Length: 135
Ligand code: CMP
Image (cartoon, rainbow, N blue to C red):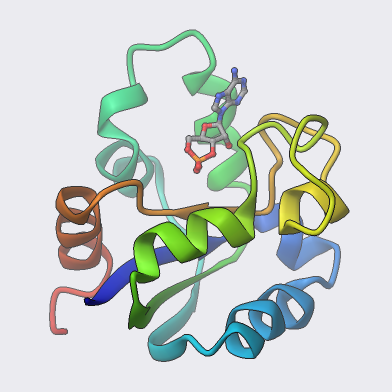
């Protein structure tokens, strides 16, 4: 089934010059970019995006990180795009993510893990509406 998913290429990836590397992996897989924006977010947008994490211990430094510089937000479309993107991204902790995944190949951190992908159809719908209300 064709799906859409919300992806963030996080500030660490932008700072490290990895936007092209990350995007090329999604494109090479066959996913289509249906929206994309280079943007610096404020704490309100971070809290809205990560609303299920705002009470967690790891959240304050995560909020500082995602608001620390520009990121690239995009919507990708393709067959089973939500699960496919999560497989390409790899496990949350870059130290444990499998080689061959974006995080497994390029991140050594649990927080600065380069990318975000929606984790379910419900999250994708909510996150796409939050980031791209005109889509
Ligand atoms: P993401 O897929 O965007 O979803 C939640 C984010 O919180 C996650 O990627 C990481 O950037 C961050 N995160 C999750 N768990 C931890 C943790 N234990 N310590 C630090 N950051 C975390």
